[in-house]
Image: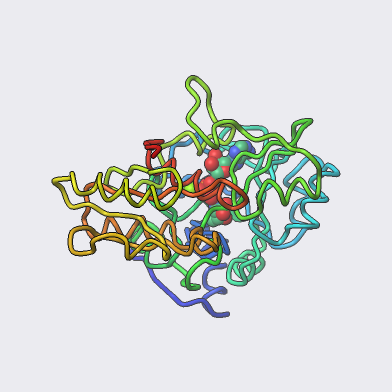
Length: 343
Ligand code: TXA
Ligand code: MG
């Protein structure tokens, strides 16, 4: 398949919509990460997503909508909590899990009776979805297991030849996938942390529960979002997170890295980048410790850069889990296969 790459404009969105309506695959930007889109109601089109990504069939897809009317045919009911969340955070980086109607194929929902719905805020995404007039199934547009793409060139690198069209809309604002909340249970449950934080959700609907698997691997327990089970976000190198006060962390990382015989990368921050020897190690800043949104926005791109530099080992500074830190550390821990050292 010949993959075409186009900058977002009205004509490109028209073209994307035609491809989607005809059962093809289009990668497009959202405010979180790039998505690999197909008609979410067309079983043949949905199967192409799984093939292109090498994604396990039992990992359900999120359906993306561009207005509230699209929701009605997809979900059995919209509970009060969901309505409050939608009013507060849609369009935006929040995915809500509902009970699904028969309109949603089991291939899309990974065999579940629930369906995850997201109303994105990105203008390219909204334009493409509304022109197609269809709920668009879109997982992150990476090869399964790789860090999610936050730039069109990441998508091209992973999926060239496996997608009809890539729409380039620049870098994604948030850089981490949407928050997922399941409101089908009595107490709503956070399945994946993201830019809409637990604290922000609780301000709107009161206390929620958090899937245990978000912060650590729990032996014998499966995460409630099937996709959180798989190895994810991994760079090619072995990644180890060093946790602690950041001055102690820098000391520890320097000592560990000096002992390595292989090409070694260090995931640093603006505050610490000059505390490592750039002649010995590949040192990259992921952002500003005091502005977690900069770390979220750069995390996946930085992990991909280490692949590009060909390092075999990476030591990463850890972050506090408050607010957006929960989402950052969730992705970093998964990238590290929960390989962490305290100092
Ligand atoms: O920000 C995002 O959500 C991006 C952009 C493209 O919108 N999409 C995204 O999709 O991250 P994906 O497929 O990479 O991750 C979706 C996650 C998976 O972990 C999947 O298992 C979970 O959502 N999920 C989907 N439907 C679900 C359901 N009905 N119940 C529980 N988890 C579900
Ligand atoms: Mg993904």
